[in-house]
Length: 159
Ligand code: SF4
Image 1 (cartoon, rainbow, N blue to C red):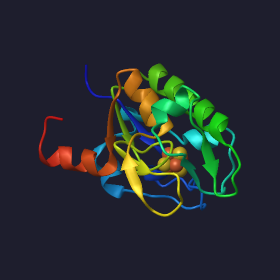
Image 2: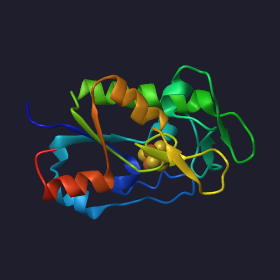
Image 3: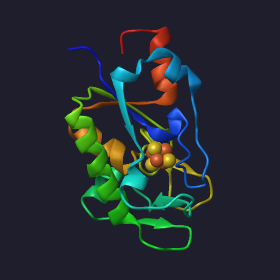
Image 4: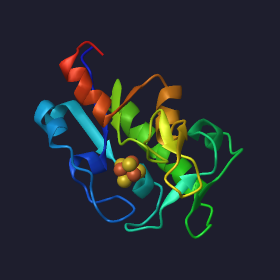
């Protein structure tokens, strides 16, 4: 089966980040046809507004948030865990409906980060771990790549 992608909406230029900006990576658009991918912002799908206060998983990975054993707090100390979890499941449904095989998810995000995320101290420190959506995708057999990993894979196929 040919690869079918889910892409973080902010990487495609949608202004859905917490700060109201996007993270457009034009090279992704240059390498994929519109019929090859679907997109969504999990945090918006979970009911959060743009802009919104920055949020970080509190000292652990998205897998543990999905088990509801740790929380995601925003910088105002509000618990936004449920919005992140609901958004992750909404993203999974979109991905599964499109029979996605691979996801290109924005690095470091508490939703979309893969392999490395902010640690929960709002100090810029990073730890090993996945965002909530990345964790859920991996649990369901979707290959998750950061934007840099995807672009690297184009230079060194196959991924
Ligand atoms: Fe981008 Fe994902 Fe954050 Fe939405 S949740 S702004 S798609 S990194």
